Amino acid sequence: MSKVVRSDEDLLLTLLNSSPLLDGEPRDELRGPGAGAWLRTHEIPGTPRTSRELRDAIAAVVRGEARPTTLQHYLHAVRQIPVLTEEGVQWKTIGGGIGARAVLAWAALGDRLRACENDQECRLFLIDRSKPNTRRWCSMKTCGNRLKARRHHEKLKSPTD
Image 1 (cartoon, rainbow, N blue to C red):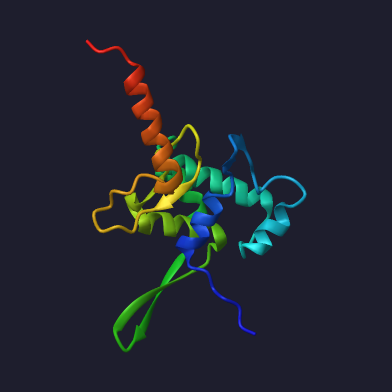
Image 2: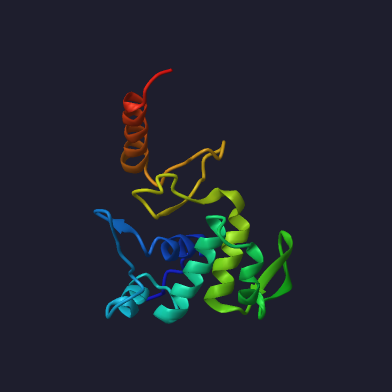
């Protein structure tokens, strides 16, 4: 039976979303006795500690709390090799492990990877695959509606000038 290879974008998003808010309480899937099992279930190689460090470093960059250069050390062992195919030359990336895969996925996504705008009730990230690149929430049904309702309520409460 062959193993399904996850896309690096999917791996990155799963890793970033491993510390959600559930019913207003922060949860961290990469802490505690079940962390190793969680990583294996989600086919993410590495230890809980190194996975947490990687997640937190990329999350800080995506949220604008850290500079992208803080991710440089994850790329130290990465090499690209040219490979000839029927379509021409393609570059194959080797080395660097999970950290390099995640950082390269982050770099390839650019501004399409972002934190949900409902930052008071949500800590999830999203990949915006829409053509206009205007998606703001991890889910319109939950976070989008909650944020819009909160803003509407605040607008009703504020005194008019």
